[in-house]
Length: 419
Image (cartoon, rainbow, N blue to C red; front, side):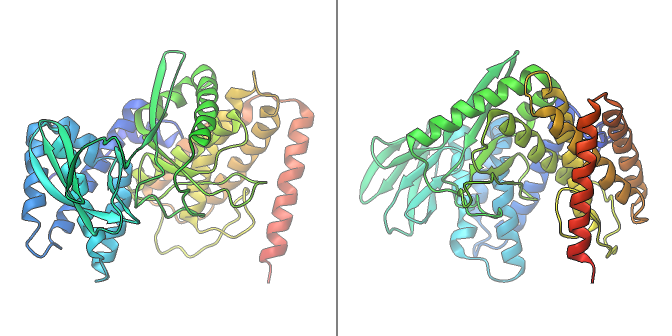
């Protein structure tokens, strides 16, 4: 019997505050894994032979090691790939290499399960990617044969059989790892995955070792700030964030970050300018992941609403769903700056600004008249969180400056969007 994932009322309520906790995040991950399975089932039907060989690998891997299987198939970029491939299939323009990426997922799961099997893994831009592990340099071949035996992976390319990781031609996914205040985290810094695109700017190609070390140093310092001053936020991130995708730095004067709707637990970003900016960016983008996962399980806004609203962090008019995403993210941003005030001098000004942005954006959501019953309950919890942030004492000048900045932003928005 097939059951539909639903959030328990207490989990929904906790997530609606803008926080949620590690257990709630794990529930969202479980629901995302289920979504991945549904998309994979649909994509298997697109194989000319029904995907019998790939299906067999997946079925045997799941039976042999269900936890390892869930870790691999539930990975964020599996969701990103499945959404891209599924959309293309529905539009009758699914490329064979995009479909056959499922073989790369299957053989990776097979090796993790410690069972034997073989698959033809497609080559993208000269490399065959084993998701979460790395890439094999494969030249102009269309695919390479990857074999799993006794938990080890081997690749046959150019008539040569090599173990993965091979001495030559192997590029591993780099890792960001940190530990502070008793909270550990380990993330992939993925500059290889063929389906890591879809952000505002292109993903970066292979980082140099020196660049990776800069990412690691900044991430370690950011994690110390989070674990020390915002342990509940850090625990959520440790439970649900799995990968970061470095983006091309197109403007040296500004940092960029973005989350993809169907890839829970990963986001793209340029290297933030400071550890405290990195810390806040981690919370900000993971808020988007959380709300997107909630929206897979609950309808919060009327999809027929065609209103456009002022979002205090940008000057273009936003649809209600986009405004709610921004409010939810900025509840996390405001809370993060609040928690960092003891150590980061600029945090007070940023907190003063962010909490007013939340209040103004949330008021527009509340007054939209386009919330569902669940949406109204969700927003009521957000309002209580916003009011707690507004009640925090701040230096009077910080509040005056923040209100003046918000007024300038609204004036710019009004001038730009008044016919």
